[in-house]
Image (cartoon, helix red, strand yellow):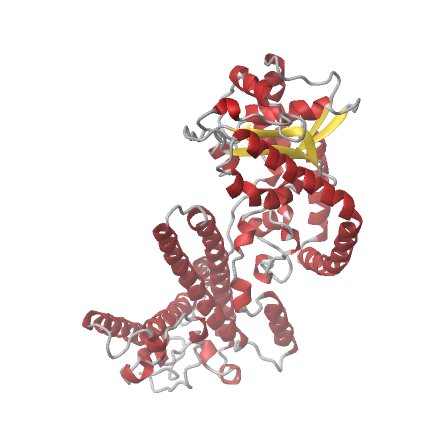
Length: 550
């Protein structure tokens, strides 16, 4: 402002904002320790040194009671750059000043692991910071220890940010003081009704949370649960003196068995069992059929988007894809004459109608794409059946003594299902990352639009895996004999483990990215995040680590 001497605060430091002059003296003398960040992509740490020379204050920091959410008096400070340690140290100084003889305090702060390293040294070196003698500090991360009460307060406090942006320093200070005082007053007068509503909501959410936890526990070995609980208790007791005990929470990423791994295992098994020439290469042959089925889905998807008015290059590309697919089908049937003699095309046999599930319902189609069928050529190899055992009836395979083929195909389809589930999980995670790293942080409208283009591409990747999963699941169902009690039981176990995927299962809530969002603990994982690797619960390390974290 033109005349700073006219900017006189009526009650400087008498409410929630600290007294201005002593605070600025503290900032001049506060020591700064430059420690390599151990936080992963935390905005507080990343923005701590962000300089905006044209602004007197870039934000505020405050403290609140973690039990009831009351703003602490004389514990709100301005930030000059980002949220730096010297700013929050001054907040703690005034919190300690009003402890009234208490000798133990719990500090819940998202980056306490980073800020606590030099906290005691900061207080010892500064003439403006004081800590009571004999004070015991317990620390925790609000996000992990149910201490995110301050984040719920910022939601309403940020509402006055726009109006205070152009105010003088004194006017701004008084508005913030009034707003925080009103927040505390509303809590005081409405706390009974608030606690009643919270209790009612807790009663309503208790049952879904219990069911979700029971489902997670039911798929985990009981002895492992007891072992993990014991490890967690030991780590909790020893972590202050030996941080390395927390290494038990490190994740060992051993993936689920993929189709190629299953194929290699089955091929090795053929060698070990000394199979005759007729049975050599069954795993490789069926695996090539699974790849052909996957190619059929890709070609069909492309064909649904090609219309009569499409460009020459687009139509030529589709024709070339169909030619390669037709050649692959012919090569598959030629190789299969050794395993299904006389039952495949080209060898005197005929196949039933194609039962491939093309997954058109997962397309994000326009009206033009949906009208494409009339313009497509009549000869479409993607709708031709291929001679996999699952394409033939289980009765036919039993009559021709070919049931051993179904066991091999089951294992390969299960590897395919594991592939697709991992792809779906990775795709959803990548989409969440895009929302956080690009959409939310986009500074320009054009950049945000480009970010949404990336999200649509990620969606297409997820839907591609869903189409393959849907086809693999239905092919697996045809490989069980429902009249056989053992097969019937195996089918039920398979269906309970690999469930149907719905569109709502694939939704990414942008609120999940902001982990302090109220009510987030009531959102439960979709079933495929809890899927067991085997019916017996013998899981790979990846899923074991996942369950351990939860």
